Image (cartoon, rainbow, N blue to C red; front, top):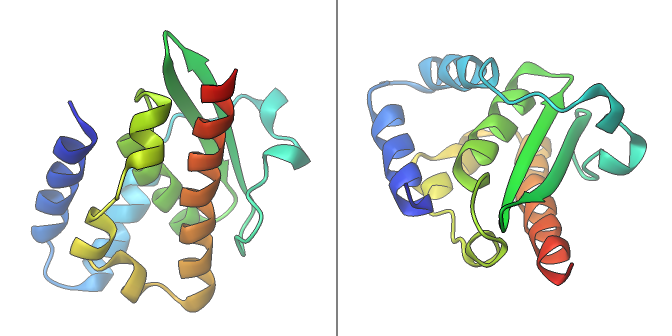
Length: 138
């Protein structure tokens, strides 16, 4: 499934919910399915800078694809990183680097987050693309 297919699936999933309280609950539910980072990778260097919450993100290359695992100490942040991991994990570095991630706008995620959470979302995306770039160079 391509990134665009995954994004379209998310847009359809979010369209089911009428208001943002229901969408927040859905984000929290998605966080429960997050592929959790191994405790040995919960290091300071894997903390995403720019997030109000503590969010750990680890990336490794497997069969020319980037595999992300993550965790967060807050339920909304955990749901947001879970969404990004779902969309970007198991893709090639170039695909991740080039991803537009239009679904963020389409579901209204950034505009319905507090400014600090919105900054955290941007930091998460930036870090995932940086990992993809670094792994591409290896």
